[in-house]
Image 1 (spheres, rainbow, N blue to C red):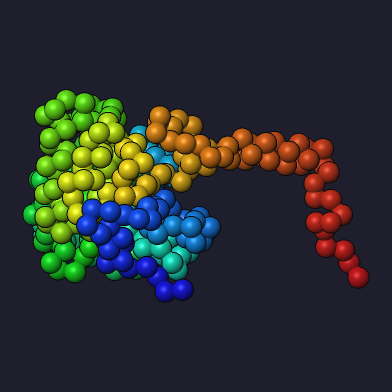
Image 2: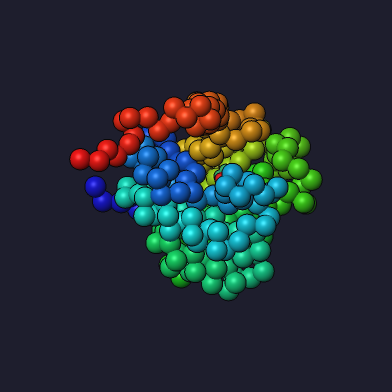
Length: 269
Ligand code: KIV
Ligand code: NA
């Protein structure tokens, strides 16, 4: 099967209608990508890897090297989904030129097809600069975690009329600049629906609405791997409990010298 392409993802929304919702999950490692790839349209190498993989307190400290290395692993582990890489905080905000250099570095290092960056109107010029130079861009509006220090936390957005208007305006600006899809994160549902109606490109919701054109979740949250999960996460599994219980079993077998057993040993002829 040939890998999906950015234009094919964009074309899933026709005249405001997306018949088959777009499926995206985060992936950070090759094996994770292998397992998720057949079920997804897009794999996002999210800067959420800062918290999920590296135990950082936010996405602010995430580096270009982290993003490039994990993106390369995800590309190696997938053959079907479009791989999108998050631009880390600090790599793209200063100017369209800085953003192009960072985006090109990420795509060259990894083989990913597109980048994602946070921000609306303020980033529209940058999005256009990248798209016109061969780099597909996914936008990200609403709750934008890299702005945690400005927002003062991770509370849902769009509760006031001014905030709601700003989010819709941000999404429209990104679309006009050429974004092929827009993540809508952590907003009250009517705003997610308003954004989805306002833009011709697909919206990908997270803590948004089932009426977005697609959905994304942090895979580790979906699997029940992370300690704290926000309201919008559905835990489909409880992998953390499985891992703890397995480690406990292994540890006790080592301590009572019942592992390794006969099946695990090489016997002389
Ligand atoms: O970094 C990430 O995982 C993301 C998604 C939650 C959209 O940006
Ligand atoms: Na992100």
